[in-house]
Length: 427
Image (cartoon, rainbow, N blue to C red; front, side, top):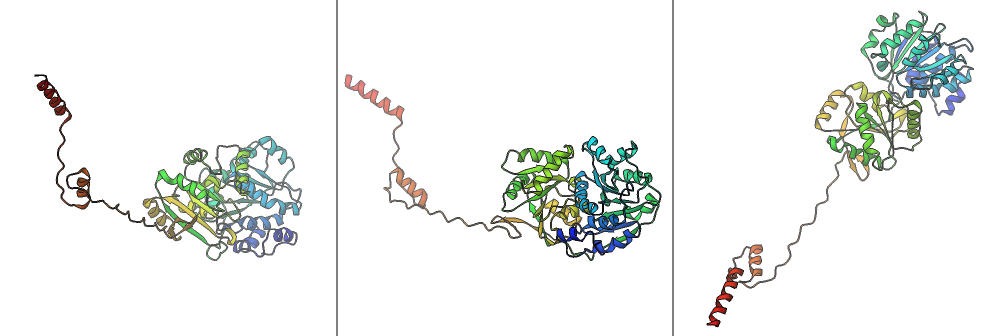
């Protein structure tokens, strides 16, 4: 790959010094209009890998030519923001179209006739069906996070959009994990697709430690609170179910934890504000589900927390990929019991998962050492006379035998004796 001279200032300003394996491998095939599947680890620069060569091919003022699909509005907006400066440098108009965003606002932006659209499939289908967007001049359709996008209902939506495009439209499928669907693309989309897999040779990910913290359900929220108060700590917290995520959010709202939530039912502006607050370090924890967290790029993110153990290996791989990006160090912390640990090790045997503990305010593989409590010293017992109550206590402590103390007369008997004594005097 040779970065076009027009892109060089932006490339260098972003701090890039050399191309990643996926950027080098797909450059020429995409420039030559080949349909491909591109497989590379998370955080390896896939957005620029497909974005730059495809932008170079486009012609300004020639209608919609490039369509990029993402599984979530957060990823669509992120991709839009990454590619927009490069599109502007070539005189191209790039717009984002996402669900739950203001439709009127999006329609106004589409009147500018963008050459590039980054979209979620559902909203774009609505606009195509209502003839607000035409795919008649589309050259390339890119499906990002393709392993997720080709799961229903995404598969039907992607196929419908592909059918609305010209028959010879170029297809690009990009993912960090493989999928059986990638072997059947000719059947579903009617054209051969070249497979480019650089996962074995890509070493862009930094050192990531995979911790497992043993705890029960009742104490997972306690662990979140402890972790949130570690020095310079910040984490994406992943949940399997939206309902569980919202329950934990309600609990954390009553505690001194700075957090935000990416709830799929919230408005687009609410979700955008939550993500921006997290990126700016204003909140420590961002609670997400797998779909909302797909592909999010948070530079130098220290940690990912699995509040619930993922049930699919792809989910763990993509969650883990949010930390340790582009050479930075990171850690993944999974909460659960011994059963969860066994399941996780079977699910992703390629990772070395170690038990984690909190030691001096840091995550560690060493269990904290409990300090032994000093032995309780017995108080010295003073000698006692044999027939006193103190002697009885002394005998109990020392094991000696003491003479029993004389029994005191019962109160009732003493009263009776006084009464009888008074009668005798009267006589």
